[in-house]
Image (cartoon, rainbow, N blue to C red):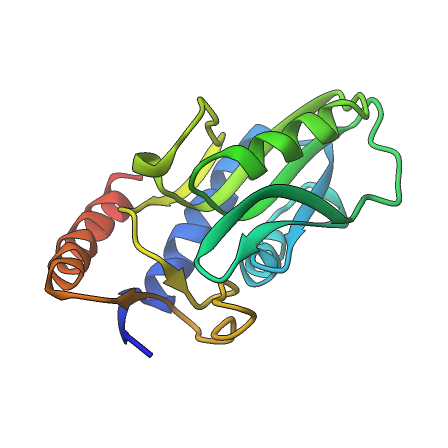
Length: 193
């Protein structure tokens, strides 16, 4: 196994989640909201976020997959779909990460085909430099460099989800230096929100 280096502490995660909840509460004040957790990676984030939401919310779950190990397979599978109607309703998708954007784009189109009134996306992590399309989230926790991240729900072959912070798998000195720079950027992002 390669070295593992902490990128975002749990304390920093919780501060940013509080900020995101404030933004969402402001945008959906007085509205009913269906909040969809994208399993398995987003479940810690989803749990912490939804407990801070003040709207009347309904919790729903989906599971899509395109990864094996550290690489995307390019094939997106819906392993668990919604079991309720979202037609004419406000929907917020909560996901762990956007990297290439293919899975997220597929998911947004899939749910849009069910005719919601509105559909927005909240992600904890955004890897802009890996984006292969114009996919953008409405609410973003942190923008990070192209690290392979684990912890706080994120996994490597179903391992490391239970690490309470977000960490990077370090393969070489360059990666180690990038993580040090990103830690400073993350603190600045937190202060700017």
